[in-house]
Structure formats: structure tokens, C-alpha cells
Length: 385
Ligand SMILES: [Zn+2]
Image (tube, rainbow, N blue to C red; front, side, top):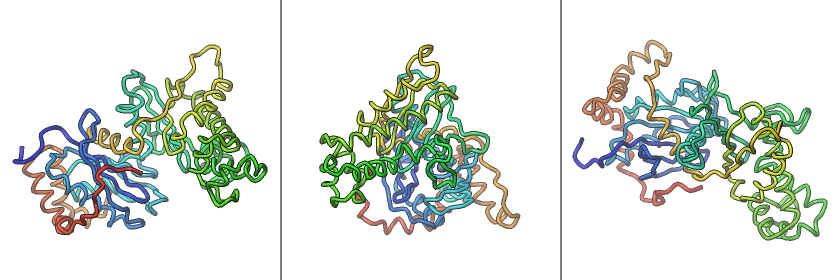
């Protein structure tokens, strides 16, 4: 072990969000021992790569064994390519290969909701439960999800399974961003909560006075946090908005349960911060709608525990099982030019410490010079939303 390195087995988890890139150093027990973050350069994959390298470079005191990266988007089943990440403006980015070449460490890419589901399964709400079948539903702006069946994360044949938010709950229902109608996330997401609250408030202004007062006084001025705060303060219209959303959340879960029969649903995302305002009506409706309810135990519906760290911790853990390095199809010229980095990446995967160190040194030279000018403004080391 190199002098000055902290002892232990560490992997790095990276969360590429629309506004922040967060990196955490994680132990095999899922403990986050160090973290840092920087702003996301949007629509510029090369700049994102530079930020990832710079952030990882800041943890040189840890001997990092592998890197797991969570990205909001469609990821191919070999966990190598970002097929489509609308929030980042990416199409067909071979991110795994790029990071491996840049940092000389085995790397895997994962859908962010899958990574979060794995993090919760291993170290959050799912730990100590002994379940092998658990579904996570992330209720944020839209609905995301991940499923662990038989103790393994399920990605589907093309890596794009578990897109729960686009299950069709209402034939010919509301138009969704995906181009179809009636998707679950049009009825049970953070956006749906705001839409519902505004609709109810415009019909019943006097009853919604608390909620309206938190915004600019108009239904259109109501934002997500206003609904939560108003409901917590007893605003009947805000409470009803949560009941509507909770019921829709349940209806989607019932469909998922009909297919998968999980032991538990772990509910994550910003909306679940409202706690029982959301979960109580969800449980009521779920119990009322579940198929063969009398013949089966009630599925546990529990809040997530790791918050925004679930994706980092999950991605870092998934990186421990990185498998063979990908042989991404590239043009012959690029392939030969990348020969050295390829060797370095292979060396990294086979655990040759000296070669790894050399590879990191040569391939991150540019990033290092950037890192030496590192802004002291990176004060917050704990990623929070
Ligand atoms: Zn949709």
C-alpha cells in the first residue's frame, strides 16, 4: 500500500445530477467516509468527465478500487453507455470507457434510480429485513424506480427496465413527456401534486388560504414545498392534494405488485418528506385495491432512509461487482490511439497497483493541473440537495 493511504477497501460512488455532480467514498458496509461535489456542466460530456476526474483526484488518500456512476437516463445492459439522458442533453455517450481511460479504474454506469434502489436495499430501508424482493419507487418531479428481485438488481434485457413512471394507469389520460397518455407519473409525482393542489385551490380558495398565502396568493403561485408546509399546518386543501396523490401512488403500486409481488415498497424522492401525509392515504388505497388481498399479507410500504445519498452509496456498492472491462466497439483509429489507456484500464482491473498508479498519473495529468487550481469554494463536503 502506498505511503499515506488510508487503509480499507473503498469504492467511489458518483451521482451525476442535473445541477450537481457528487462523489462519495464508500466502505463495503455502505458507510460514506468522505464526499465532495461540484456544479454539473450541462450538455458537455467532456466537461462532466473533467469534473468527475477532478473530484476523484481529490481523494488521493484513499486507495479506490472501482468507480460506480449513477446517471439519470437510459443505460445499456452492459452498464457502459448512456443511451439517452435528456436532463444532461446526452445521446449515446460511452461514459464507462471514458472514465476508465481517464482515471485508470474499473468503472460501471448505472441508472440513478437503480443505484438508489440498490443503496436502499443493501444499506437503507431494506437492510436487516432479509427480503430478496423489494421495489423502490422514487417520487420526485416524475416517478422513477428500481427493482431488486431474488436479491439482484433487475435491469431488463436492454438495461431500460423498471421505468415505472411510464406505466399507463389511465387509458387516454393526461399527456406525458414520453409522448404517451395516462402515465403513472402524470398522476402521482411531485409535479402531479402541485397540479392537483392548484386545481383544488382554484375551486376552493377560502379553504386553501394557508397554502395560497405561502405563495403569491394565486393558485398558479403554489409550489411543491408550499403544499407540504400547508398540509403540515392543517390546510384541508393541501391535505386533500396529498390524499389524491397518495391514492394514485397506491394504484400504480398495486399494478407493480400484481406482476412482481414484492415484500416491500420503499418510497423515496422529495415528496416522501411529507411522511404520512402521503403514505397513509397510499397504504389505505393499496390495501383496498390489492388483488387477492384476503389471501396475501399486506405489502410493507416504507419510506426510504438514505435520502440523496442512496444513489452514491448504491453506485459505489455496485462498482464492487464491475465484471470484465467492456470491449466497446470503436473506429479502428481511435482504438489504436487509445491503446495505452486501454492497457492502463486493464492493469487497473487486474489490480496491478504500480501500473494503476502510473496510468492514473499519465491519464489525469491535465485534470491534475486543473485540480491544483481547485476553488476553495468547495466547502460543503456533504452532498445535500
Ligand atoms: Zn410517460
